[in-house]
Image (tube, rainbow, N blue to C red):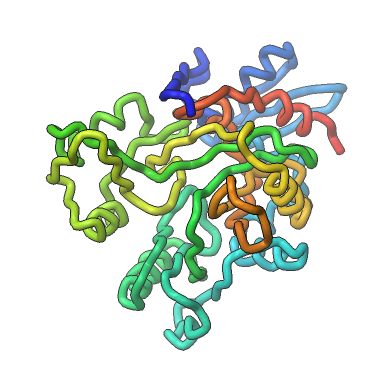
Length: 333
């Protein structure tokens, strides 16, 4: 694995846009296509090509994907139904409404994951919950963001984001959960502060700052640690289980290391919902092991596909995915 080589320079004149939108605008400018900023606060632009106008939201949301495909991918429970129909492995789970009973969870084995049914960016996601008490607390948190909450069995492994464009995998990133490595002197809080330098508060940057929220404190507590503890030199400590970049995770390019089996899983997962352009989240127990239906689960389908993690990873190659994505959008299929 390469050393850290994260180097993101905002696109001059467009720094206020999310990084993924900046990447697409840069490609549009490179191709000398006429475009218009419709609403910079909502990352909404239009581009003209072959006498046709194409509307692009947040860099990847366009009519490249149908409305029904977008709707399916935007609902985590609905996504499960389409993955199952296609014979793709996903976690066993239950969907809860606010009047739920603990009996609704009787068929599930701990540890579990709790998440809102229709949010993204890791909002209110709690993982590796080992007791009903912890699960109920996480469910209450999740109901603050959605009227439906999914509880599903926890699957051990690493989470990868596959960028699928027109039935081809164009990039793969291992999203490592937020972490710090000790130097023998600094507290965990101080290590977090140092690692946060160069990261953004929002999506105008590919990598976001680590925030010491409730989930971080809980995860540290499970390791008998607090923010005030000093880590010995070289010791890496994970601050949460979920690997979203929005919660301080690191993106590490692994495109050249991934077995073909899982690339085919990603393509089939996108097809299951009719997505031409998508980010597919897959947890794999060991990419060096024997691949099978039991060695992975597909976690989510993301029609809004974050491109910046593939072009500006914390470690690894810039995959220049914008050319494939813009081709897909402008193909007008």
